[in-house]
Image 1 (cartoon, rainbow, N blue to C red):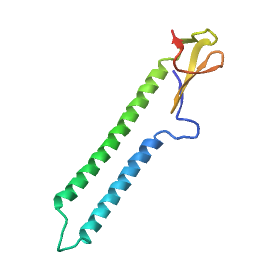
Image 2: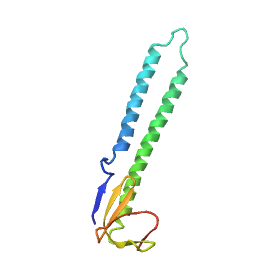
Image 3: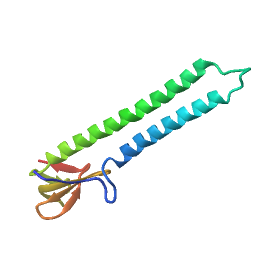
Length: 133
């Protein structure tokens, strides 16, 4: 069972999720630097409430955890897509009007969908209106 390319033309797998994780780490470091600078430069006669700092840090931690959760969900969805696409190989697909029909020889997975290559060499975008048997 062969499953071909993962990712859209010109894109690299995992780029979006790794970029989001890197951005979160950068923003978190920036937040901590700003927090320290704010504490160092506050007016000693009217210091800010420490609970406000803790609330800011807690809010930022929640955002960071949400980004990490979304990244893991994206990885899970990609894995599920690969499994589902692999199960199409060797099966017959046909359009509702009968203009396209054939046995799936290979599958390509892109960011925006799945393309099946039939035994006739024809490429078909998998989506609504196709029957798999």
